[in-house]
Length: 171
Image 1 (cartoon, rainbow, N blue to C red):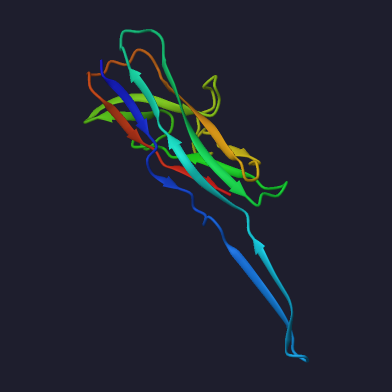
Image 2: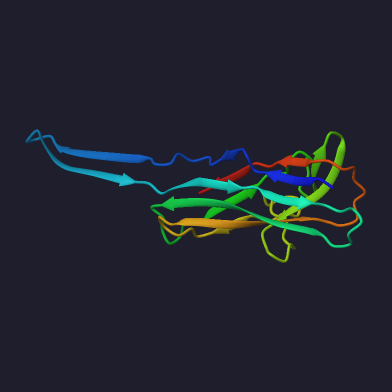
């Protein structure tokens, strides 16, 4: 049987990579500049998204098919109280529980999880889903795993099944 694949191809970081605020103070009596300050504001950017590629699915196998992908980000100017949130959209099924891959009108259910045990459905924090929310390391690349699973026992026609989910980083 052919492969089912999940691609997280669209990326919406939602934040500019770098914003600079510049403040200049001048002492009017002497008409000379007495001070200049610049602040580099904290920012985060998505570096890469590796899709979850499940490989072959055998509808007669009693075991689930598991796979792993990742979202890599880098944040700079991070304060001790800062947090980054990563959300994963619902995909083409319109619901994150379960998500669905399609081949035409044929559907293959799957899901994406925050944990290796595959108990916390990764979504946008609504409808029974969880989000990734942590303090990011300052200036280092952070690779966050995405755990995928196709449940067993689905009577599907052979062919390639795909879905597209949107990854959003809020910082």
